[in-house]
Length: 497
Image (cartoon, rainbow, N blue to C red; front, side):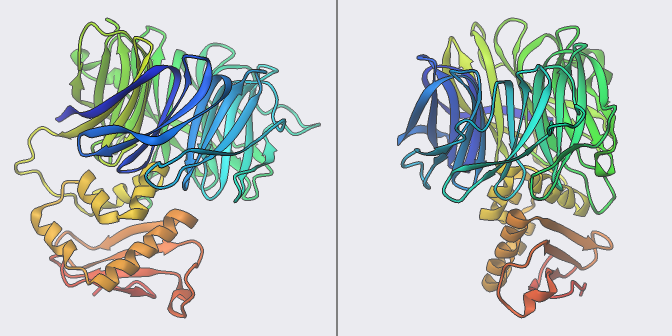
């Protein structure tokens, strides 16, 4: 079981259409439509359980009716429905410490009428927006965020003189699952949940629907969507998780596996199979994010009474769900919107309460850590894959992979000691190699015959980026003995000791 604990928060003015993301373990960005109907960005600083608004960390723009947020490096990108009902992307520069939020460029007239706007970063400087176009049909557009913050429209899913790839929609979400593949989860023209996988060409000029028939489920009135990783060491497929308000008005969380190349999407399991006392009840304003571990997810929502409720779920390798934690922080509240994002091992939520923005940090921890078994090789490999699939946590991995690992996984004191003994030069070069995987793609995994044998941590970026002769091999490896000690690292073929 897991315990959900409030770990600090802050309050701002009237707000709606909330989004929240984390730049780092100490910096959070929220975006919203403020009480004047305009776009507003607020930066927050987190120090333990102390949360404060950053000095000069506020910026505003014109009238908006919807807001989506993505972070690319130190740039925040907002995708909004502007006062003319058109899609508008705006880039913002956010220095370390959120000492300012400076508007750079916008997409001008590069996009037309749009609603139900969603957005995801798909690696490097590319973004994909998904929306309900003026025609009422689903439309995806790929964008390049240029070095100066300007935008280039690269391509879309409805090229001229081509058959339509998608039909009418009334709700739209999108998630990136790796390898230039995104998944949309929409409410289709029949009012049902429908999932579609799309392949984006490496230059962004083509967005192709991979499965012509899509994958449908029952009636829904809300959809939240996040990716979950596969395990490349065991052949596991990546996928997505939908948290929906189903036809009965209740929360239902469903796991989906995306088949190779996105040619199909298979339902892996859902929370309707939980014991009757654990099946989630009435819910609205639903959001979901990973928190507390590699396979733990935190859902936020307005419960039937109108109060905020948080529920933690664990997802098993076979697709089965477990309800492992609950919290209703306060009764008698009026919650009318929630958003949530991963925040290292924790979660950060943005909630509209009595029309005002409430930001909160949540710890999702094991209720009893005594005798907890340390993460094994399979769990570690799943964790690396999970982090690389999540842009927010991947940035944290790039900054300090050991800190993130110890925050999110059960690590014994002995393991912490052994990690601290990695030679400083090797640790620095290892961190650089991991950063290259985050920036350019690639894999990170551990190869080990058993939990009592020597092993090797293999870091393989897709693109060389260090000017050394050794790096031409393209693999960075760290060998260690059966007790996870005596680390030796370097570029070259990975070989076990």
